[in-house]
Length: 261
View: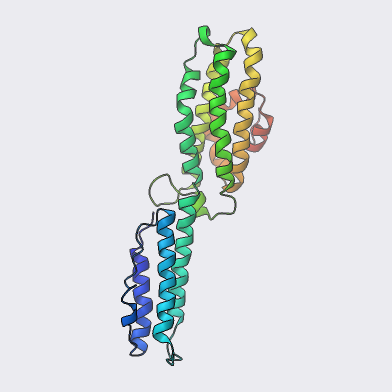
């Protein structure tokens, strides 16, 4: 999260405009200045910031009541308050709405144990009874991620491209690597199953795996419109699994990514 030391300086500068313009008694502000922005990484912290902003407005109204401030440029305070409110709104969105990178990183953490089970499957246990629940677990994680991504529609890019850790907004290329890693994890596991299952099992397993591919498509149909240029950055990274996508007959995914199967 961003540091709020700069925001405190803005308030100090804003209040300075009043003290330089007229001998105003600011003793009434002692209870709220300097403003303690505290830890705004939680909803409670954000509520505290909002409350203190309200306190600033009330105290300023009290201190300046009845004074002739025609010669004072009050826009300094107005601009400072607006800047802080905007910052609080952005941080509030980050705190309550996980970014694309966070969602995909969470998905990878959840599905990795299951993709490993599929990757190391052997003919002796490559049965519908064993494969089905593993695939269902992967599908469950992907399905749960879709509404989280839908919540990002309409958000600022600083929220959509927020990193998993740190403060620097991700580039499209960096995000593409995260998304591609998740997709390759899934399709590589599917490919391992396709190689190992025998003909009679393959007839039953292929629709299960194709259905998982359709869930991947649904996930990407939400992500792609969120980030301009994501498809172009993804394509070269997905080269190792294009053949698997083709085997599953995922025409909607192929169309979305502009793949020639």
